[in-house]
Length: 306
Image 1 (cartoon, rainbow, N blue to C red):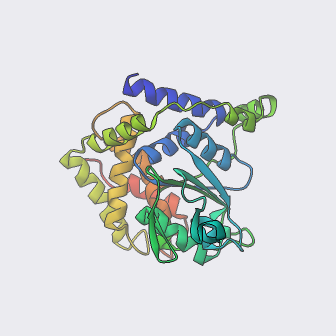
Image 2: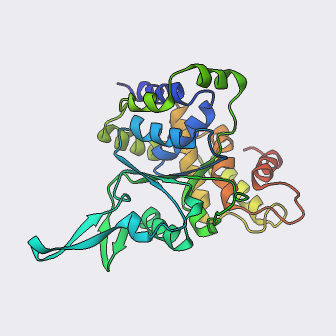
Image 3: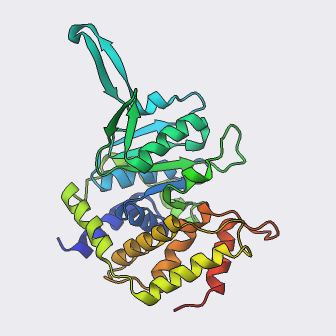
């Protein structure tokens, strides 16, 4: 199957389960094709977990789900060594983090100590258990969900951890037509059970390589730098975007371009991904009176196109 047909089949299958949210579905696919981790932030019950399950199934990846709670210990994620008498020694029992897709549900309910164990896994793609470093499977994606901060019993993720997510998306409430389809249609859990992988592992890796080969011309990179510079001048945000964030924007824009059927990045691709790749890394300037997402959109309007 041709690359574009594969990508279309991928998006079509996801859109049958997650109705009326094609933009967010495309963002999720772009994030995984770019090799990044995805954070889905929204109120309970709008389909965050359904989207994460559907992505893992459609990508043909083996996945584990962990419900994050205040008493979740780092070893509950990474695994433990248990003494086995028959073997006269300790045997390592891997935890759920040794999956190709880890669905971290309600990540902001866990203690900072457990969050930092996940941080090592996300950044290093390995974990250290009892002094021994163990590599994680490849590919390794974290799809985390979190409820908005004002909900009870949540620990806000530290900036360093938010920075490890390539994108943060919100699903929001469905429109009336999509909600009617949910009310009248099949149970989503049954639908997820019936999903077939659209990609093999080799095809996924090929698509990820294709993302890296998408061309970003000099004027386009100038545009990205102009946007990043605008976040650093103190007018919009307390602190600007880091070089790592700038690299993330380019990677996400390349994946967006590939999904749009192009082998080069257009300014539209950058604009399409900037709010999802930048807003969670930024704190609005004190007198802004707007959230980070609105500020990023205002900044897009203010910075001239190449």
